[in-house]
Length: 250
Image (cartoon, rainbow, N blue to C red):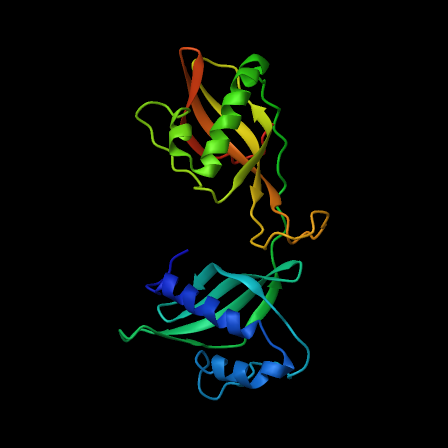
């Protein structure tokens, strides 16, 4: 869509900042909200922008989503946000003063809209797995991810291809389990996918009670999917590269 010379990125940022104030209200902060909204509103506009002072609304994950510029000065920005379990949109009309000062103002009432629904994800055929190579790779991948998590540079380099360098987590996570490995049929170089379970430190002080079941004191287990390029040299596989896996493994 043509932008008619309208400064798209700055306009979207302005609307998203406005949405962060507009979409969060409660009676206790009505005066504070009005003061914050004043920075966005044209003279003479309702200080509460149509809110009657009752009830509460809380919005998070506020992000610019789309913009429709009708000329060099006017645009309608769509902002995505989350409230409770719902994804929603806010349409914000804004005006740009094309005088070189980079000034914007909200030019009309916003409109809350439902967000688009989820896309249907087509099912893909499960890839043919090379079970023999998967069994061969599994213990090497377990050791690789132990060192990848701990930050043991010497230990990690034993599994990294010559001339390659892979940064580690430096102890931020602890390897718990290699849950799944998918190895396509191929030659000496393969692009494999793995599901790894990390233990995430809780940040809480250890409990003095060894029988404590406090969930806040235990490290979380978090499953992550990775895609690795591995190559075989002699009787051992080495990692060339590691990235996010993308589509679900298997």
